[in-house]
Amino acid sequence: MTKREPPEPVQVIKQRRDSALRALAGAVPYIRFLGIEFERRGDELTGIMPFKHELIGNPLLPALHGGATAAFLEITAVITLNWAHLWEDMEAGKLDLEDRAPSDLPRLPKTVDFTVDYLRTGLPRDAYARARITRAGRRYASVQVEAWQDNRERLYAQAMGHFVMPAPRG
Image 1 (cartoon, one colour):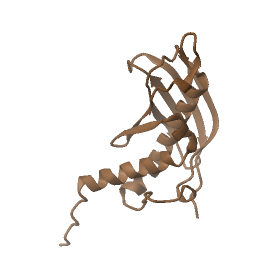
Image 2 (cartoon, helix red, strand yellow; image 1 turned 30 degrees about the vertical axis):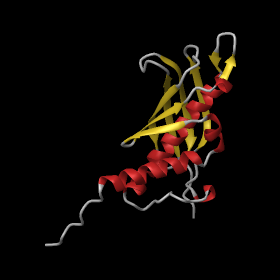
Image 3 (cartoon, one colour; image 1 turned 90 degrees about the vertical axis):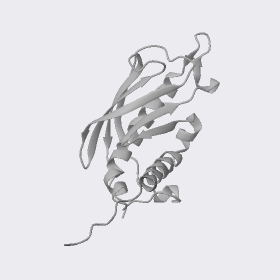
Image 4 (cartoon, helix red, strand yellow; image 1 turned 90 degrees about the horizontal axis):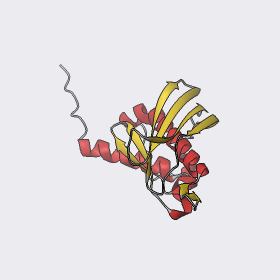
């Protein structure tokens, strides 16, 4: 009878996941410019776009700029898709993204098309988004994204995107 290896301590697993997520999101300058952050619960990500006055598109209402909203939704879709794509290797300990140069990180999926539905005015406050992968293959993926502000049931925007998955580096 062979002896089983003890499981990794949960703190080690959490630290590996958190550092991988920071590396993926931190490597994209536009994510840093918009101030977008990601909160992780297991394999589920929630994008958070903290309110900044620079994100106002119509100061008379005031309302979030539609371009900032679209970028937020697309970024949430791309990071969620990449996160899911890398999950198995990361969990198996085969993928360590900490302290890597941006050029050494896994490539991001490329957007084929991205359609945004603006359902109501984005108010001058924090915004949240969650993406759901509706189809994921080796080369192609579809993602649906929903964004809200104060109430998860009252979406202010939603989107559907199609992406080409990156070929592995090597």
